[in-house]
Image (cartoon, rainbow, N blue to C red):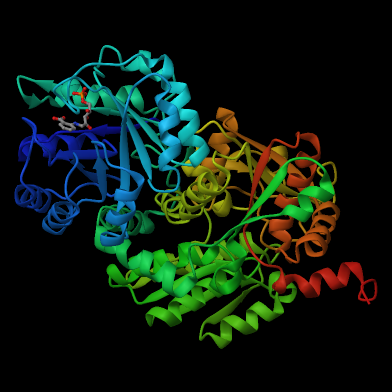
Length: 611
Ligand SMILES: O=C(O)c1ccccc1NCC(=O)[C@H](O)[C@H](O)COP(=O)(O)O
């Protein structure tokens, strides 16, 4: 589990700059009486000179200050969190919030016997706690530790309130591991990273290393262990390198993210809600199920998250033509949509078989101005559409951006799609902690290529949460008609990367089958293969029949019609809810809505049962 880390008391540009480079989560400046006190105009200059990293937050520390002074400081420098380190009350915080409504507030509580009870006074008023040592003459920064046996009590109360609690006071490189045995959500250090009054780069780095169990895949070659990589014709190597450079530059650029978030919010409707499936959970009589409602995105599925981001990247790279492959039509619709939104031309490659199954989506893409190109090779499904899209890209690489819709393909696509879809997991984490007060016990998502699943799982990868991907078992994994790549496949290369595949002994691809067009892909994103072999994620499979049953149950108990893809995740969640006790919480990624599938469902179930 990752521990949040805050470095406090930066007094000059060099120290602030070292803190930024260390990758620490929070960087603090003291605006109270102290040897570390700084002037907000200096802080403004330092931050302008060296922008913080995207995930970092700047904290201003105040002690019993007037609200007017805090407001003045906040207007003079870019602080995201106000830390109140004195005797401020809930009433004072309410007044402060009315002057600074968007500001996050951390309240320091100085440790004393039963100090954890004091946290209750601030419930609902603050966004985080610091527990620190108070000495006779110092409010903080004393370098003196309190008795850490009380840490679990503070942590439990803060967890209950759904916010982090940082432990401060006398933390050093030599004792931080001891503190971590008490499992604090966060740690705050000032003296412990100092050497002769200056912050020490080596100590900062050591602290970051000691608190972060870093998951660091892919490597610089785009490999997740032995999986991933770039198995492409020479003609595409340059295009992939150019794409990787553009992607890395974009994700380091706050402006790119500002625009992306604006589009996600104002065009697609993010954040999507977290819905407690109360009636479904009571019906099952076990764990509580929560649904992350990606079905409520514009165009009806998670695919738009990535499509918007890649289209913005295409524009940034000056490429005005996008191509895409599609199976269920969701990614094709998302690509056609963003092409219209950003004034790009769009060609969508789609297997003829899928075009029949998803007739309405084909019409919809054309309505949006895209050209839908039927693919008649192979099984005429997603694999063949992807082959054709790659072929087209090879001969139009100069002005064409290939907008891949899942976490598959050569590097950097799996990493890029993960980055853009991780908004699902990030939002879910925040919403879950806020609503439930803790992380879910299990998270379940369906896996075809694996983009909704990796987007949901990635932000939880270092947390103590079970992650379960659900593949399509079609008519059963012991028949020849399934798409259970991880359950039944073997390692090989497809569409530019190494992963598990459905293939025969000579390496020929076996045509997959699933009732859901979005899951019948013979490969899987390389990161899923890696996570399976590492044992970090468990992969299960669900048949067509089980998925259809779950779809009907969700319709009838929650009034939600899921995509057949997402119904696979719901089916497995229903199984697990019955197995787990009523204390357990399951989060399901409801990746898309089922309107596109009504025709297929009607074909299987007949039309009369529900009259
Ligand atoms: O650090 C200060 O000088 C200070 C002065 C007045 C109020 C708060 C102050 N520091 C607050 C912090 O967040 C420190 O990181 C925290 O007290 C831990 O300090 P240390 O024991 O030196 O690690």
